[in-house]
Image (cartoon, rainbow over all chains, first blue to last red):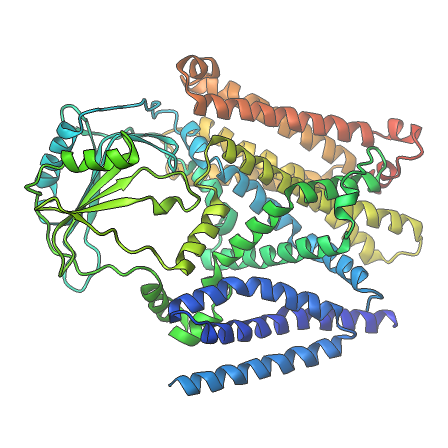
Length: 94
Length: 545
């Protein structure tokens, strides 16, 4: 890779890991808070306290992906899937 | 991007470490000082005399004077409590007899006005508290480790949160990078330039790994409302209303309370009953309250300590009119208990003296971990930079910037902390906004240290600032002796280990910085370094300008 495209791919990957990763972690945390067999407040607190471990794993995963584009595709895809699951569960619950 | 997973993790380790390094150094230094916030606070308020043990076998007269005063000062109250003389592990001090009350809340309000007083245990007279100099003390240092200073708390917590997240990443990727980390632990090579820095970094990392992981993670998880509010937002709504709705449901709710009256029952037999179970002098507090749909109650609380979850000390409930023992309130949910334990592990409030020192030493190791990491970044890059003659201009500007910021942070911040202690002793006691001025002194000196680091030749800046830190700490016990009556010899004679301990620790810090300064001076002085060809880092680190 040339210098410029290398730098772009690093910047893209950093953005995927930091912002995409935060979105993915948020979606996963919400999903976990909805499915944990605890009272609502306790499920929310448990899921939120675990979220930082998840965020760490997501960032490491984004950096070990074969390319920045792949990292983006996987992160956006997974976030959308988790978001859809959250939506379905929320709809089902009410 | 990078060839292998481990190389990629090494890259991540390097850059997360660098970006978070300076802020986390500040967080670790102030947080580590925070483990001794009570002790530093007492040193910084020399007007408050040392408290002495008060032991009363007969609690009857104490309870009597306390109830008399409560009836007089808060006749229409939602709760009364009486703290009996005891030694508290949380405030690390002897507590005298004191009372606290909460008036009936006004309509549409959950809490009423509250107040407290210290009482003379014999006469029952209200003790006017000592009026020490205005200072934020050690608590101020502790607060800065997550609230920083001159910034809105919401902003500061997010800055520290982002840096703590980078630190967590740096820790995890560091372990992945050095998969032979425990083996390398036994190969400490001194005087070998970059290798030595790496070895020092590795040794510290291995020694303190559980502490670093726990401290960083618990720091993050305890701020989840600010840092990861997604689940709260979805389940309870966005913003402050959602947050409040969550907390109302999550934390034990206050039931509606009725006005209380002085119990007709003698309370001493209840105390005796509790002491039979907990041991003599182990009743910390009695409180009297009347929850709606229940009978008026007297609740006895044991002194804290003996478990990590120190807030969860045992209690006993009695009917305030018949003296009948009632069931204890149900234990908190496991989630809440877990959260409290995580917080307790972070803050170390449960710790006895030796555990507290272990916390302090671990915190110092954390500062060392970050410091060696920051220096290592420079040492490695300088060598590469010198090897390639056609390096770009901005790369060399970046290197210069990082090495100056390193000096200003690693040597400058300790100097600024020393300045905070100096300001405490030297600023006029009558000065307006005195507590804020102490912080201003800290940051003014830090700013000067940064200027110094940028203006002096690099190796001179390192050596001179480190010596300045040494001298600044060494003089503090002297200044204490000159400006107050609480000098070291007096403290030792009086058996005041808190005042003496802070003085001695300041000298120990001076000694440590003196040794570091001496070591750095030997390595960075041009004549001596040139004599040894193997000292790559010495040549490398020496001022490139």
